[in-house]
Length: 196
Image (tube, rainbow, N blue to C red; front, side, top):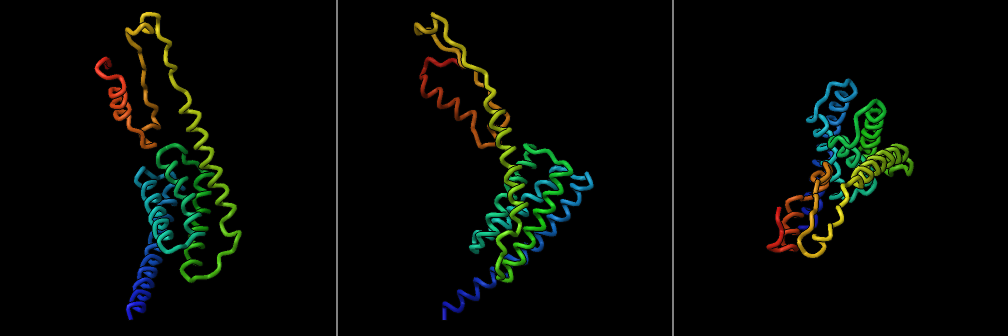
């Protein structure tokens, strides 16, 4: 008896998930139309990201691997757009619309438990991956532009001190870095001889 209730409960949750997917896809479509018209703001970008992120969460919970894989890459690109690592332009908006269409197809096929064709959304997925990797390469090259540590003078080398210039990059906080934590660890390493 409890197995039947468990199955019914699972099916109910699954039905609710797919209802929510349809609502979330409508939000994505509405906000993409604003992007396409050039009449958008940060909240539009955030709303698109949140909608796709919500679809991703449920897809993993229900074991929808094809859907989950696609939406993960889509979400990654959206995150780079909303954090301004990628600029919105006509080509990217077109790609986002095509990604939304592929996502809609994946959601519908998954909802009806129909087989997903191997090539469904694959071209768009590759374009999304390429775009994400271009943004990552751009970030990596920006992060490598650092101020070199100056070599110590003879007096400094003899124990009178070192000078360290620390200027966090703009992407440090976005990547989850904690500049204050770095300084706290430096204080622990240097002990009482550190002057900030």
